[in-house]
Image (tube, rainbow, N blue to C red):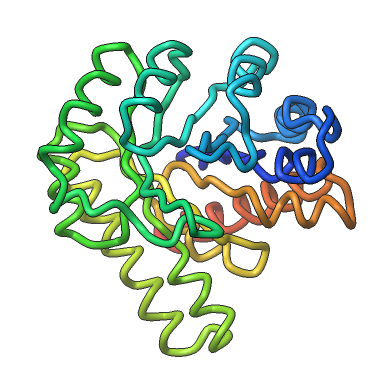
Length: 255
């Protein structure tokens, strides 16, 4: 059974810090706690408006945390230059709007091939693993493969919203089926498949059970849960739910 990696997004530790200013709480400390609790990587989104993670945080995360950093960035010259300067383990290109509260959907890779191509090429030539954050749509996956990127991250937001709205009813099943099919298509195209956005204790198991998904990136929910039970406890519980779902799915396939 392939190990399912957990990337912990520590953006919203920085959101809380920035609400008041100063240095507390420290996202680097959160990243170290995540590593000790069983995370396999750290994710941080450097937004154009710097609403949470700052430029200085990126340097400190790379220098002070013994886990690979997945840097989420928009496809802009400024963000490309920052990524090339810091050379994180990975860079995930995401869509970004100044007015949005959080990322609202996947990249339109198919409609933006020529814009994205030089960014992907520059990151790849610098030795940075490139991924694209996409909706679970075969057209977008085929476009990602055409760009030659090694990784896609499936946007799980629609699935999570459907789970909340109809509590596992027909809409949630439909969105989960889209994720399952997209993961299959990604594997057929030779793309490493990750998933994330909005995942919680209640929604993670069906996604963790998809065999060709090799990494989940989870942030906001874990930081929120940490208020009540501590970050260590929140991550360990998520890790346990992921591992249990993976093992049960593997057992069912071999039965």
